[in-house]
Image (cartoon, rainbow, N blue to C red):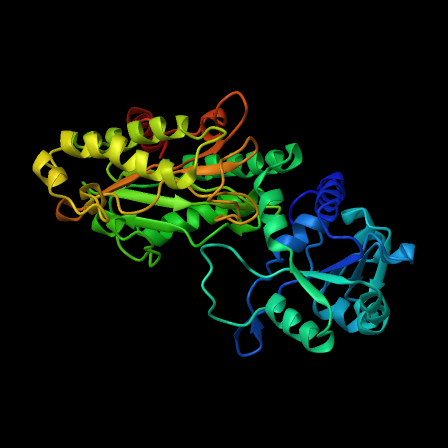
Length: 437
């Protein structure tokens, strides 16, 4: 791992929170993600299962976490099963956790090699009454391919059909959505790297550069600051491409007079930042571009103030659209009062220019888990990312900051980090960068 060791008190406390909500005499088992084939004999970069990482900090393939608080054998109340290295693995793949390193990382004293798992775990499962297992229950997930959690669930249900199986996801979704101080330090660090990446591209962007060159500047800054890389495939969209919400081709030239929308994030220690900024390619916004930009910025600022304990996410989205964005679109001449009067209630008029939600949970996953139908609470972390997309004018503007909910009001973490966002500030930094070049 590139990142510095994480204080294992995070994982110790996380396990305590989870096991406190298990039924008596229950065992919970979490498996690491698969290493997925890219093509031929190549694999994609390994990304750990988010639940297993949140509970243990273990960032290695072929790992299994077992939690059994009522186990009659103390060693199995919490234990890890890890991949045992050998000379061949050491030569071809490099270092793997030793048992001592796994303990230091996770705070779990008992570590076994995973080739003993099937034999060791059978008697423990047979003694337990309930089995907690974890599936990908992220609201945004659409099942497209097999994954280790699902395969493991199917295997255990075949082997232990008379046990009571329970979902770990509802417990973990609530727990993971409330960030601890250690987690927030990691996320603030990721945001700090995001700031460095953004300031780097402000000095680089000019007419004629390719979108993928901007992407390359970002990853350069991320990796040199010990990040794992992008927290998602970055969107670097110039001109009309900015009106395509998930544009990731990043293969067009940045033209004089166009805006460049950059939606990117840093993965640091498996925690994500998520930022969107819009940049005038030639260093100066036109009046129309600045008017649209400032309208989005006003909505972002006002929407962030609504992210307080007790707010319901689904109602919040409606308020941002109908009460905040609608007015800005009328003032920009994009909507008329007749458009609003005659709108379809199921697809309000504002959605022609602002068709997505305003906020999502953020954490280990860039679209993190959380209870979207329950009131927000202190410790929740959200993005705030309104946008206006005017296809007929080739203008797409989205501005995104990361907002922490506290009992004393929302805290904009990007403002706190000094992330540039005002149109004039962006112009000044670009002018300064051009002068240095």
